[in-house]
Image (cartoon, rainbow, N blue to C red; front, side, top):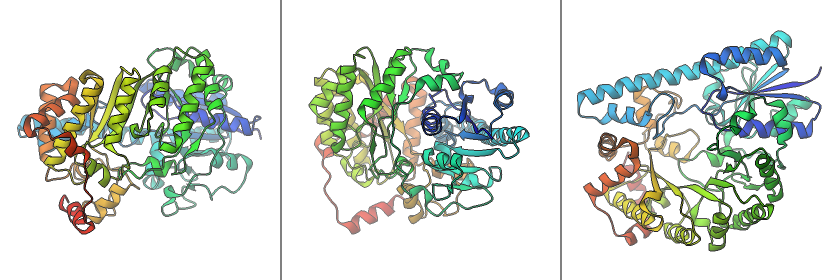
Length: 526
């Protein structure tokens, strides 16, 4: 029987579905006779989800459905599909005004309803699509993967239809084995109702895949919705230049999903892929790596790529990325500006070197500042988003003051209007060091449900523990009341008004403490 694979990207915000695109491209290069189709529910109105999925299955009659599930956990500092989850939670937990508390409770109820509705809807779409495909091909299979599945694969075991192949992390080698009829259970996967996920499976390293330029001529032929992402000039189209992240940041899941081994995609292939999109009219690119420059030893690879972009003649593009700013050099800064970088994010998490060390971030804040000065000297005059995650581990009034001092220095470097503080409170995720820390300090029970949005669970997963939790709650509520359209900057201003600002040198210094004392400090915030 002719193998026919239908890729279904489950509903989410309209972000370019690069995972599905790369998977289909990889399969086509290995198995050119396999028929494939991409169906992106992210471009379909919600009332049409079921009807559109039915029509796609009826038309293509696949022998296999590959579902990509991007989002489950919804803790975020910004407005989402059901409102602002952080604001709802903080109003409910910390507001003194009973009417504001009630508003937060009602907002939380709407949020929980939307969350569980989306969860059940996506599970229903998977079951519906598989059942429909089996009308045409009784042996049709379903494979489910994507970011959400990689994080919550253990919890989804009892929710997905029997026989579903659950893929954790990268799916290329797994899908290739399935197509060839080979044994595939040695991959990071399990089959619902037939096998159990191995203990700590997410921590197993993925099999490396040699990445070549995506064939967008082929992708355009199998994906009728491709043009959707070409219509607006403000869409950033994803291009991956590497996989893997070597770091151990305490709250981050990237390093286990993608593995610690950084695998560089050849610069010529990345540029060839960008050129295809460029010829389609795309001028905005987002380098979708966990980190564009994950460590200093990869600086030369980044420089090679940027130089080849210049050599290609694509001189009217813009690009953005998540960057570890401790890994820049003056030469690299110059190349970044010349190639059109017009936005980047740095996740320093804290402006206190002491806390950066405790959260296992692995960088030097003094170096970050110097590299930012080099970037400004090279001519960078665009927006910088700086992610701060207050109250993660061992936050104190002194470290808050240090973060304020650090942020003000970034404003002096780039200009206050160019530095946008993004205020996060970590959404605790499974398989991270922060989860282990919460277990060890009795802040979470081992049997907790990370997919639960019940208030008694959500308050622990939206990480903002006492003794400072109520203080941050009060500050954030004041910021939303005073300046909801510029929440991050308002939080920084309120914190400085209340606490003052440390000397910058105090923020940059982090004396090493005795191990026993450090352990006591960690326990103290529990």
